[in-house]
Each structure stands twice: as C-alpha cells, then as structure tokens.
Image (cartoon, rainbow, N blue to C red; front, side, top):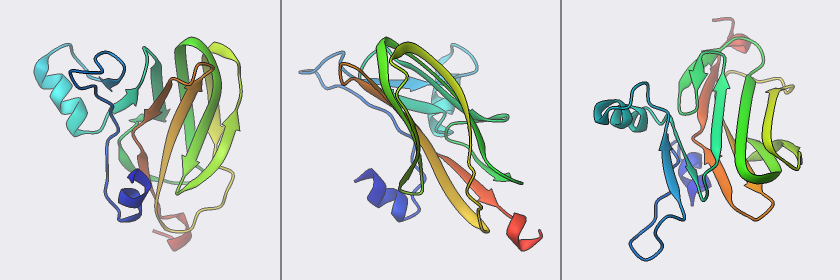
Length: 155
C-alpha cells in the first residue's frame, strides 16, 4: 500500500504505532531539534521520522538533509546511514523508486555506512528510503527523501 501511495506522488513520512492491545511493539520516532512538544510535532510535519518495531535507532542523511526532506542534488545522491539495534542487524536495504539498489548483511548490532547512487539520473524527482531488519525479524524504516535532479536539463 505504501508503494502505491508513493507511485501516486504522495510524500509520506513513515512511522509505526501500537493500539491498546499490542502496546509497546511499534514506535514512531521523531528526530526533533529540541525535547519540546512543538519541536516533536514540527519533526513529524517535516517527516523527520521513522517507524520501528523495537528500540532501533535509525538515522539517514544526505549531506545536510534528513530523512523526509525534499531537495535538489547536483551529481550522485550520497546517503549516510546509522542503524543501532537491540540485536544484530541482519540486513539493511536502500530502496530507490521501487527498486532495491543496495543491500548489506552486517550481522552486528551497530552499523554505519555511506552509500552513493552510482546510477545516472535524468531530470526529475526520485525517492530513497532505508529499511533495517534485525536477526529476530524486528525492523525499522526511514521516511523517504525526495531528491530532484536538474543536472540533465542544464538548470
């Protein structure tokens, strides 16, 4: 369903939440600038957030941009990824425009890496997000970044 929404150009922020029956098995995490209600709400509005089914830290950036941002890029897109799980991270995927473009199987609780999109991009908007899965099946997924390329148009 999420990919259907992305195909229709909806710009979504990802989060997870539990109901009163399944308490504490999913989390909506906001990357807020301050520990205030207003800052947390602003982070969700800007889609600087991610969903998780365990206490997993997930931080995805591209230069000065956070997950959830829309921005212009000259040249290849570079992502910096940090995942810190409660158990070993079995797999981390980078997804771009419905395609798994990179996967790694680090098998350790803390993972940091940088990834550069080696594909040549034409003009237009692409989206990228990262998903991490622990060895026990618990996971986290970052809100997408929407990256506009103008390089092929000479703008």
